[in-house]
Length: 280
Ligand SMILES: [Fe+2]
Image 1 (spheres, protein in one colour):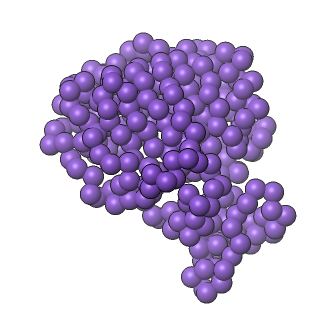
Image 2 (cartoon, helix red, strand yellow):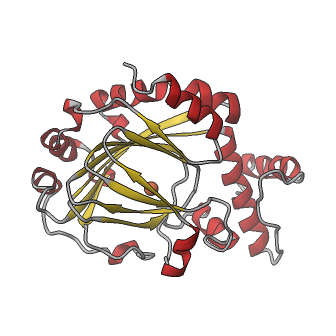
């Protein structure tokens, strides 16, 4: 299955891994992405792979336990997503064989290009987001390289640079890699630093590792497929932030992780050793 045309692959190859870029894709009207089929998937996935809540929420939800429930089952929510006022995430869809094939078909064109720049791509994971008109995905970051394919409806992703320390501080990165939640506190004054990416069916957006974002759904039901992977590069970031967190807990003040810093290889070597020893 060809999902991305040559033009999209070339745009991806130029932007990856650090810059966001919009691509076109051909994954529209796929039976696995119809809401009735998604309702069946939601019923069969383990509960810890299904997250859903009311969709009319604040952009800033740093405490995810405060996110209001919609009082429905996930199948009821998905079957009535046009009027349920809700947001649904189906996580790790690769645990279902049909969805794994769909996701791997999408990734098969991307992985060879990604591996040229960030080393071995591994841990492919897929997510489906279905949301009611007007729903909001609160401000957060994700640990993976991600391509979000918009399949139905319109949404706007407000995407911030991954390395803007005034948006996410080094301490926040360290806390996240120490097991903290991905949601972040948001203040309207931050918005000037965001790029708003308008996504309609057939659009896809490459989202760099840990680039913070929030999403505003349009006036119709939205369905998106997210295909993600990890790499040597994303792993290095994780190890170094964990090492920095360890150093900070020991009373040190480690320098922030910045791309191109000549100390990175030495620091990563130390982090690998500590990781192997189970000390990170
Ligand atoms: Fe996200």
